[in-house]
Length: 113
Length: 115
Image (tube, rainbow over all chains, first blue to last red; front, top):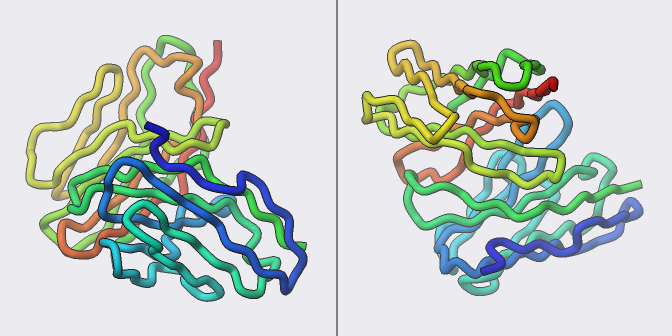
């Protein structure tokens, strides 16, 4: 099993450009998440999908949109990138239920100039 | 809203010795879960240990153990017999037992292991 995969691993954008970060999991998990990690801030939840067909805002959703394409895939879109969105983005997935751990992808380092 | 505080931005330990990383949290809930994640330089987030709030017994995973003090809202991680491979950023995280699925992370503690 590949676990949680993310593409791309690195990306540089100019201010105002758009892009989609892709995430897929092969563990048959119901729930998927997008986090961002900034220096000295820990990880913060952007959006999550408790199950296929549902999405909800997390702590820092402004400037982002998500799509739960199917049970395996959960994408994060930046419509008009801003320098404040320079960060490392992590996708995670888990079995539905609070006791279950979240499995993380390798992350995408995004720089917006 | 729940908050998680890691008061030690950096810690260091000699190889083979023991180190304790601190974490406190603030919540009004009685049903929740606590986690320690490790992030080595590879950036991959790896679960180290998990504690259910309803369990009085402290969780243990090989050289890693926790001291869970529910009344004090404290959840520290003890690493025994530290190894060079333990060097990483460590994050404490909180998850509600209700319908909110999100993990709330602390800001992390950078652990250095000296040979």
